[in-house]
Length: 309
Ligand code: AMP
Image (tube, rainbow, N blue to C red):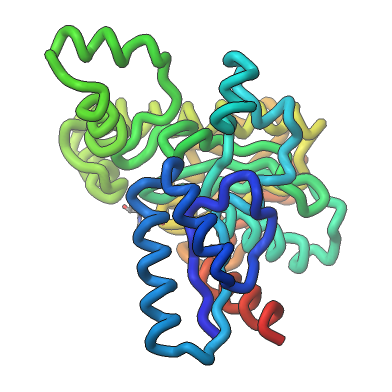
């Protein structure tokens, strides 16, 4: 079998599916939401179909896991007709990773009835609240530009600054969006790099812009964790994953330090780890904290196997 990761499945696909002509048609139809990715996915699927016509194929949508959000969580408070006419709503992203990590935590603890906050912190970052194995809320929005501060993406902003800067700089909407997606976040604030390793090195050398970028990133992650803590009525497990979440010892420490008022505490010795499934909370922490390496490829392979069987 062949499993394809597809960025956007709109509000139609709540799970992975076997590829049919209709599925390919839908992937093309949802290109409006992911113009860089969905058309390329369709080309790729068709190419595989031509070369290996007898091999079953599946698609695993990155939006599917978030389809369990309730309407009061996924809607924006914009005119309701925008949702009815154009499906303007929050879709979220990184769903395959959030599903894998929350599933792994459940397996590890042998329990399905858990409230888990998954922090996928990489070049792109998103936070998801998962209750009883289902996504309750997530930080990315209509597109992956929303949510926390990222490598090159701004995360949440007041949209009014778009026309303001357009006028000041004589730029088009497209140009401003490009800057918000590719020249903001760590890169925009540090004026140095989008890579958290460079930011960490620069902080050690006393670079104040790098320290500011890191602080803004940590603040934004803490904001979502605390929001989801209340939204779910508590949290059993806080899980860190992806490039920064799995590897940056200091970032995990800075984030959890700010959660002390919720009784969440790290075991600093246990936290001195990279890329291994590890419990890193202290024995007196109210919430378990885990480092869980993500594995989207395995999730896609498992879905594919289950579907083609
Ligand atoms: P991802 O998008 O999941 O591949 O994550 C990329 C991000 O992870 C980049 O900002 C990297 O700097 C960061 N990262 C990878 N390895 C490390 C490390 N050893 N220490 C700190 N950050 C790391």
